[in-house]
Image (tube, rainbow, N blue to C red; front, side, top):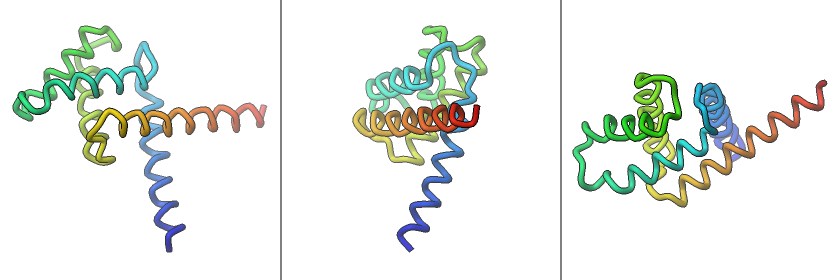
Length: 116
């Protein structure tokens, strides 16, 4: 039973990680998630929830991580969903999530190289 729960979580991670891997950014997704986490740490207790999304998207836009404002807004939405879904309520938890994502990408690249 424990194994089934783990497999279900792993599949969810795969879907999440694949979606992150497809984001059309100029920098690695880990950099964006880290920046968003630090931005959010500074505003989450003082800014109303409905304004957080706009402020986070604006911060990403100013850093020129994406081509357009729509992509920045979508990244901010994904970030807030990830925070809620994985309970990423601290910088340490975000780093743990990012490390898991990076391991997934490295493993995926390694498997791809074996098939060449």
